[in-house]
Length: 290
Length: 149
Image (cartoon, rainbow over all chains, first blue to last red; front, top):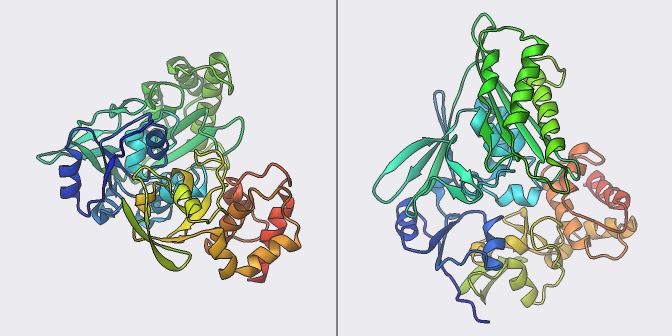
């Protein structure tokens, strides 16, 4: 069986990459940790692979006041070691450095993860809890869209054929805490069976002024759980409120039964890990949040 | 297509399909130390260094290595024989199929400044699977190498 060999182009500027990527059947390749396997097993058959790994402008991390702009070509390793990331969203950097194994961390990129959109990936719940947005460019225009709503399912995102993810934008909040819980019943290197990111902001007098909660791995995409907004306006929410949020999260989850557990088991694990994440972000747990 | 990169310190040029893996290209060069395992980036058998970082060469497309600095176990064995000696001294292998990947990850762990017997070291190496030794001799070997550096 002869399979057509894709063309391979490796532009050195975003402008060239956008032009090459606009061609019919072109596919952008970043780290390739997901795509290389799909191409090699012929599950996707692009006419052209547009390699983004030579574009310095996509690998930059820039901070301007409270706005952190993460180039889509940044590797998980870069995110895990960057001082600006540590200041604005330390949890994001810490989690990025612990995904899968060091060989993936070396190579996999932020933009690749967002576009691959596997609902089990670790960064999406965190980016949702951070209220991050995505800067998307085509040869003729750019647009900024929230991470919430960007993914519709595995390899199905709000991106036209001629568009590329250029940046992820995270805005710093002074009194924001974030906690991330990932449940992996087998090896710690696995994709999570349940992932929970909780974010909390407090005003000067310690009243909770904003609260976010995002789940990963328990639906077609990572998603936000609005019920957590019940915490807003309180200083130390009582156990009943936390329990109601945990139950709402479990009810909103749509896990798939597999060897890691049944639907009912995974929903129970959602409740367990939401409680843990909230306790940590509220400071009820010595292991803390960041 | 033509792909030029540095392999174990020597600039080379190969012809390969655009969808060839770096692992295939290396093994076709006779560098068979990197093994074919899961082909998903999970097991660590095919670990090589690209620009000093460990990668799974099974899911690293060969053209992405253009102009980059690739090291396999064959080159690393010459560059850091004391690391190989540490594995031999600790008898840190049985069937040996994971050993090249373990050695390369150990070298990368040393470059990251990880300390012997630390949780960080264990976490770093947990992505290289061994199905014979139970890992302790591997950790012993790497620990003694790190302690002597």
